[in-house]
Length: 189
Image 1 (cartoon, rainbow, N blue to C red):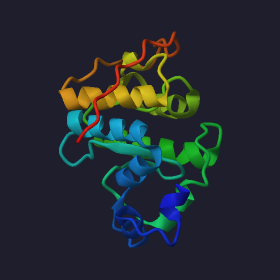
Image 2: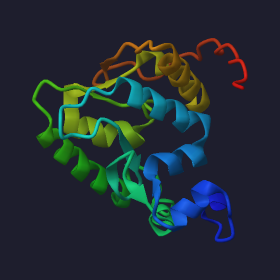
Image 3: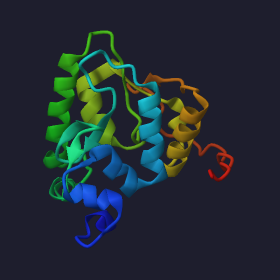
C-alpha cells in the first residue's frame, strides 16, 4: 500500500487515488495482487444482486461493507490501513456489523450472501454469521487453501465462466487438508 500512497508516485492509479478518482476495488486489487484480483473478477462475473443493491461489496477495515466501485482517495485508503482486520477489535467489527445489517434490510428474504474472504479464521465469519446467519454462504473449495490459492481458483473459475458450488457457513467444516496445487496459468500476452 505504501507504493500506492507515496506522494511522488506517478503511475496512473496513484495519481487517480490522490485526485479521488480511483475506486476501492482498484486500490485493493493493486495492494493485494492475485488474491483480490481473483475475488473481484469472480464477484463481478457471478453476482446476482437485486436491483438497487450493489452486487460486489468489499470488507473495508473501519468502514464495513463498501461497494467495490465506491470512489476512494489517498486519505481514506490510509485510514483503512490503520484499522486491524480483527473481529475482536471494535473499530473493525462494529462498522462491519452495522453495514451487514443495512445490507440484510435491503435484500429480499430469500437472497443468499456469498463470502469470498477467508473462512478459516473468525475475522470475517464471526461478525457476518452473527448478522446473516444461514444465508451466509462460501465455496467449500476454499477449505485448506491460502489467500493466493483462493485468488487463483476464483480467477480461473471466473475466466472459464464456471461458478463454484456454495455451502452454508453455519456449521460448515472450515478447516481441512491443503488441496493439490492449482496448475500454473499460461502468461497472458
